Length: 449
Image (tube, rainbow, N blue to C red):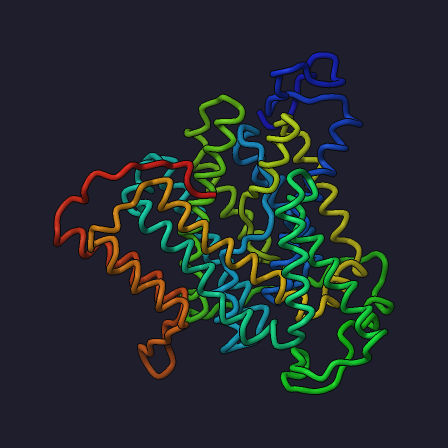
């Protein structure tokens, strides 16, 4: 059921070993507190990634709440999860903006990817989750996740880091320390805390050292400018609708973001499996619905100018820590996120984040995404002594990291992550068909996420 939660015990707390199941709740004031925790947990990545993609963070946060509520309805309240901004689309979006700096084209491409993801969910719902493992075995899934992360290295090197190399370095180190030394809640929001620290350091640097002479992303040239400007913040309204816009569609842009669908399928499967393990319930029949929900969420958010969505490991971590798996907390979190999106000053504050700070944060984020691919390989004991595994995977990753551009016609080319994904997926299945069945490998569907 989607609504109608039973009160767990007396609604006050948990006895040792107990959990609050998805269809249960504690008292409503306590549930509001848990909902707020979920908002804080998703907040860092959900507004950092829209900034990296050049999209409105107010729209992203607001629509993440809408997408989460839709997701819960589609999975019939069986899979507690929050839909925050997906990192998997960053590489494709950066490639699109290198050709055309249009928010409408970016969100149009994301919308089509959301439709494809939803259709994949429909197929999985009716054909069974095993179809994923046949098309995207662990060696392919891990490679795609890896090239999505490492394929973004040039964004740090060419765009963010040069804007303020010392602030970028300090922000990176501060974020390292927070994530590594704080194991609880503070560690889970380490990216957000590192970003805040970098912002404050940039403001202090302006006061102490004056303006910086470096590459300015706003003017696309080297000039002298303040690291932090509060002009847009002071002129923004306290309350109002965010900057919605309609999408537009270009085939060349759509091709660049479609590889992210593979990563989203892997993320969703892994996250749903993790929830099943924690709640001790069989949620496999809802994996297809979860992927449909994520696809529908991405379609709805991008239709008004928002970011792509995915189920969030950060919020799964909150559930593991609190042992409260109630979907009531997620409905509350969704409502809170919608209310936050109605504060334009928040969006202006996010836009004021200096490029150097984003350099220090994204170098960690992109690296972590890439290493998740290696984690998939390790957990599934992928055999790289088999040349069918090694050859297309290695080639695809290098093409993404380059990034290498391959011109198809005068007006259309494949580059970076899109080209690497095609080589990985097509090359693997072609070589496997020619060489025969793979040697026995261990499959572990919990590996992604």
